Image (cartoon, protein in one colour):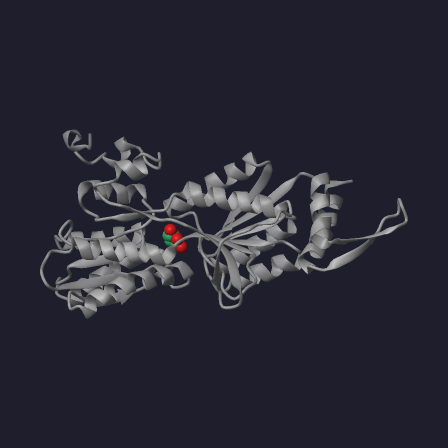
Length: 370
Ligand code: GAL
């Protein structure tokens, strides 16, 4: 059968599968009738044509982490015998939708989506489902849609770890002014990071230990936006700021630039997330207090395994679920890890995430950890 014909047949079979109805299939060979489910039909067809194609629709490749996500995900799917087509939308909602449509029309078996906008991407799920294609939300949840599976880190915990580390590093004075610099408000994760951080910060505030003097999201996670927000926070408080909870390393970078202009780098603790190389270097130099390391290998490999399993029609069991405003989405949560000056070697360097020479590039060699 021509490749197009095979794809057409798969499309049709997937529709059956997604319909979740038992169908009656007449076999011409024997003339008898057997009852099998759509899912079984898809499974059997898959065995005949082993060509698994996974679509990966990404918001962006701007932050360092997403380049790793892409590379590891693609490699893992290939190891498992499948092919991947990845498209990145550069933070553009309309482009992400049209790229997803492109992937759907190319006959992907499963669509993995890292949404730029947690709400508008519901349209992608609906379109994929019309063609019988299951959708996995990658790292960020898609809201108000029948998402089949969600693979992520414990995002509320990320926020808690960030806030706790900054509070712990604040000078031992009884009071301190705290600035919260969040992520993009279009990203559901940014809300969860904030939720986790605020849990810790509000508790400290009610004990009279800190005061939250500034609390803003950062448009599209852009460091230059974070820098502007930090400048505003410093101006409004006449530089009287003792701690900055920044939602990721890009935001931390912007904040540190603004602190630097006021001679405050290294004096005010700043958090981050993603263990970007630049952030790990700042930690080694004492300019940033911590980052949250989320082993990209874990999430990318897990998502690849699940995508291939779904494409094969295998049954998938997961322990967690999270409500997305419409349904309880079966979810996989991975553990984030705190990284400070004290454990750079035991975490990111040991894992091969970054090399020692890169991380300590700006630190005199006699001060490198043994
Ligand atoms: C979040 C993600 C973070 C960070 C941020 C900016 O959704 O979980 O790791 O990279 O986006 O891209």
